[in-house]
Image (tube, rainbow over all chains, first blue to last red; front, side, top):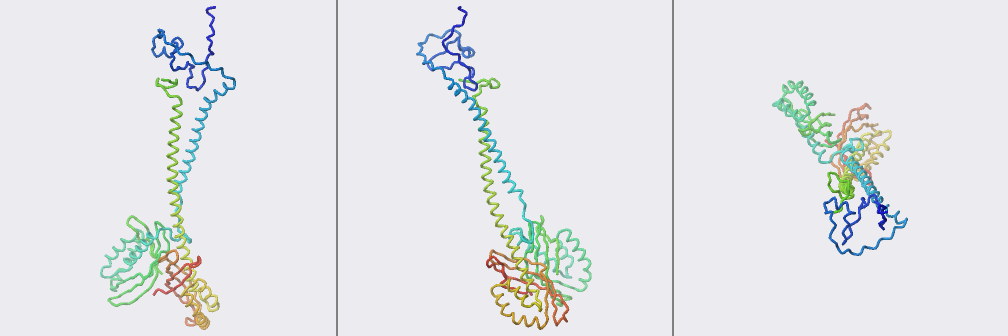
Length: 251
Length: 183
């Protein structure tokens, strides 16, 4: 009968999944050393296998009463509940992050990808006042330089004028200037222009149309011959070289 | 030291540490994103306010040009056989001194129109804003049209004008308080 395992008087402790002591090792009790035979952990960390010196043992704490079935049930959920709670927290944080990313994306779209206003009858000017005033002023000065010319330095003035134009418009202007050059120089003509009024007709960031009221004075062979008031719609485009004239329409 | 199994490389792993680390990372990411969203929200709000102001200003240009165009076209479309209607259309878009002067000369204008059998027709080719603020604006308009009366043997003769109109905003409407020919 000696081989028959004797009941130790203690209930075997069942390891609890997720508990802080999953191996079911006996907990270290303050003021009490563990019996060496029952402490594989102690053996594994190199403690001598000899029995420890006798220590006056404190009275063992009273054995807790066996848990009732309801307590047993209530012991396990905290371990599982902790995991569930952690997963729930993770889920909530992930959802929050997804929502915040969505909000950030919407803000980014609004700030950088929203449609810029376009010129229309309701909104003919879609630039700030400073920008379109600068463009209208550039159109006015360019028109003055382009239209005002003299037989004395005709070619130089043509060169100066084309510097205020886009390449396409400059090519057309050069052609016209070349066509009338001989007649203009032979008649010893001089054209002076003054801008009587100027206003913005349409404007966006890349192109502005300015209405100019021009007063033109023509002198032929030193004699004043004609005064002509007319209107010009001057189109200027925004380039690396500033506002350049891309078209002039007169009526 | 109490340890838990499951650590790699034999290192002791604190229980639940990977979950905690993940939570910390998620919390940090959430807070950073929240800060980004708040900053972005402020930017969006400011941009929206600026856009609204810009839109109001841009629409003001449209309103001013439309009112000036209507008034200029009313001014250059006068027919002796609908003289009173022609004058009423001009008066409808006028205010202040201009309306007073125009109304005071109505009787004489009606008489001349009928006597000369004068008809003037035209349209605004281009109109541009010279200056504008919330309550006043100056516009120039280039018109193209014809006039026919007994002096032209009732044949239409080209009449192009350069007009300058001063407008004021009254009760939400842009009305002309001065109209001048630009010589």
